[in-house]
Length: 253
Image (cartoon, rainbow, N blue to C red; front, top):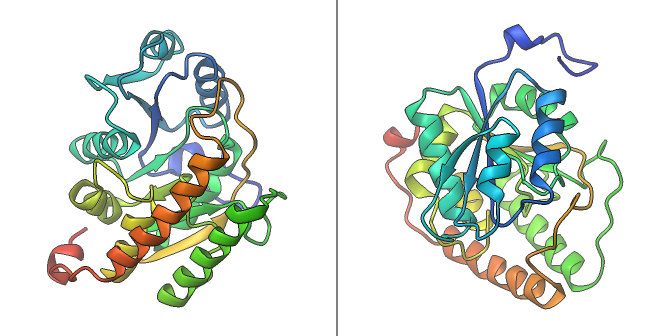
């Protein structure tokens, strides 16, 4: 099922893997998986159970997902790296992150797939032109605005939501993530996105739909979110000051 403006059909979509990291998401996960399967049945799904202490693994399997169980809680970085390595090993054309709490609306997946045809990494933005209104305020808004300014300046193309986890990568992007995605993030996606831009990967944003989590309890509150954004700024500075790797290696697709 393509988007309203797309000539693509399920049969013409490249092989796409949705990577869904999950930690103690037994409440929201079944509905998230069901909605994904009903909305975009032509993509494959792997749930990476990040050492959950509840029934996350069992409910994911019951909902029809293929599950990789990590031995203990290693963090979203390790979970996503596991997913990208699986995508690379299985020969997928594209791999994308979709949160297990239902915040990332699957209706936006076709537009992400189309957008990555000419790019290596595409970030889904809640705030880009064409996106449904999504409000943030206070220190979080200020920090996100600063990060957006820095990324836009570095990449030479607009970025309005660099902390978004709703993103997709082609084979080159998958290879990059397998090699450079740290198991422990300083700033979630910030450090690797900054590094990807610095290494010459083609990165852009596209508008997507997001919403509040569909069940369960958020893992972070206002204080933790503020700390995260400070770490994000620090991670950006570190990433932009790392030495570039061999371009020949990065341009292998």
